[in-house]
Image (cartoon, rainbow, N blue to C red; front, side, top):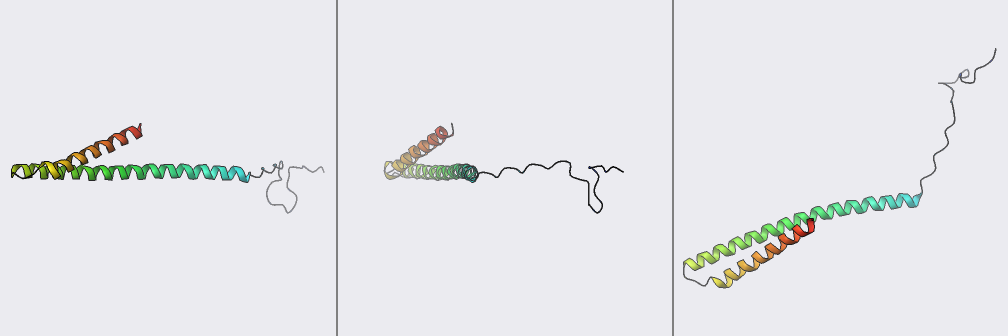
Length: 111
């Protein structure tokens, strides 16, 4: 009786191994560290981009409110015959210019 090499031996569990796979090479620690650093840098960039958008939005909202409030105060002062150019008119102009500058910077940065 000839024995088939593909048949399991008595007491073996499962079929006989067809071929031995070569062991995979060990990953290079330097490559792993470079990959990890690149992933961390990408996460940092995304986080900074989101926080920058939030800060720009909050700053624009604050400047818009200050501009609105100063214009409203200047109109009210003008209607009652009080000084309306300084300080409410100047504050409104400064806040308006800063709001336009912030929005211009945000639009330029997103391009």
